[in-house]
Amino acid sequence: MKIKCIFIDIDGTLVKESGYLSDSVSSENLESLKDYCSSGGKIVLATGRDISTTLPIVKQITQIVDASCIPYLICMNGSFIYNSDGTQILVRKSFDPEIPKNFAQIANKSRLNFFLVNSKREIFFTNKPFSWLIYLLLFRKRYPRKRYSEDMDFSNIQKAMIFLKLPRVAYWRSKLVPMFKECYFSSGPKCFLELVDRRINKWYAAKEVLSFLGIRVEESAAFGNEGNDLLSLENAAFGVGFDLKEKTHLSWDDSKIQFHTTNEDCCGVSRAIKNMKNRGLY
Image (cartoon, rainbow, N blue to C red):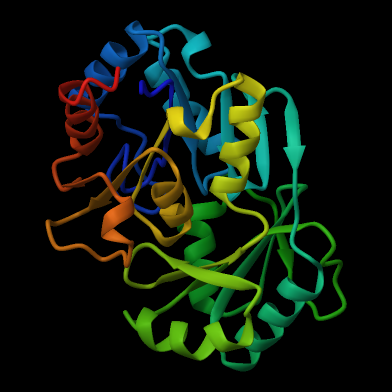
């Protein structure tokens, strides 16, 4: 068996975990990606980012590999599949409107700082000071701001997030999970939670991409570090789990994960690809 396509998460996997603030791919990771692509392999970036913050990563990679090596881009955790340069949307998916509506109502009543992003790349949030701070730090350059209201249009929401003032992810996850059985909550940094529709996820999108490429699941690999990567890690032929430190923070099935590494030095992707090569997978 040879791995013909790798699905790679960005934040916390390909680059350091920094809440969209880092676009720097290490030279070690770039060299290993080049080595893999030179064998004919394909790379698909599979990320929670939107297309505007994904393309700078693509630009870095395509400085050393041919653009044809990155045939598709999966953005917003599977809500969008784009062509290689992000100019064409091939697949678009959104939440069932009742899900983000209920999410926002519950978060608002609980005085949580939440954000909703729609397919028009508009972001909705309340006038809480902390919400404004998060918007100014992370989203101002990418999304025009819209004020949340209970009677707004929820039909095209594709991203639902909560930013906590204190690191209480486990507490709020335990409170919210029973209310959204059709979804799960992915966490990244200690103060961040994201609602993910089980029907719309990176693995669903990855299988779509594999069908476009004519590649079997048995010929795919997935690299990731968050809850929204778990389905990909456990279902691809070669799954690689990443952590900032050696201690794992994802509850994966060990029998389905082929390799585990740290990304503390931003070289985890390089180690994973070298491990694949040592196993004769490309």
